[in-house]
Image: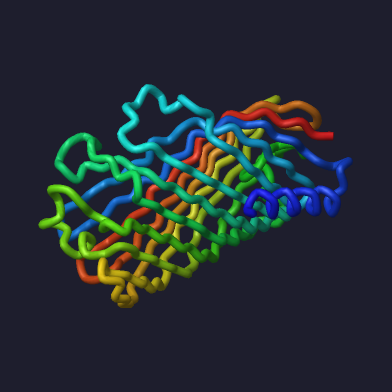
Length: 300
């Protein structure tokens, strides 16, 4: 159903933008979505066995939408302890100096260091769903959000600006056998007794961005950091539900190095973001993410 909805959105957005002004981008992406759980001074980390993903993106004057899937047997020679299933959807609306982004990803299958070894524990049933809505506004009206977030098909000029952001993030982690297992159960009893933990946060922040051309190449970078209010909902192994509220921190940064102008362009870019949730007391959950891209685009 998700793929059908995505195709319908893609068709409708292409029609509304006008195909004569479209950009098609082919890309290879390495994604990552690590989870950290903290109890006092102790940490446990969960890492997905990430593969390289292919992707296609269509962008117009005021939007982009992308979809991709993993390429089999491209897990960089890492031992496959826990097979990882991954889905990702992204819609972006870069309107001059304003950017609105909608993002969703789902991972199932992690490797962890719960037994005090180098990610040798297989957690095939551990699932993480992460979604966000971000609005970023550049105070300089000529700052190009498209050059920062997508591509330089319109040509890039030197510019810089303070950025303001409003964000809403949601993270849900679940495993019916318990969020923490194996030999770390005694150190992390709070998480061991949970089968699901859902956290939602909303807040605002500030940042800075810059775009700079160097002949046929351009460089763009931007970063924001913000704080917000969050509530979390927990389900125990006995399916007893409880709630708490607390503080949350959100940050993200983006870089883009590519050729720019009409026609065919090539580039590399990265998107890095993290959410830190205070669950209760000295208990925290952190989501650490990055997407690294190599891409080529054509504009007509």
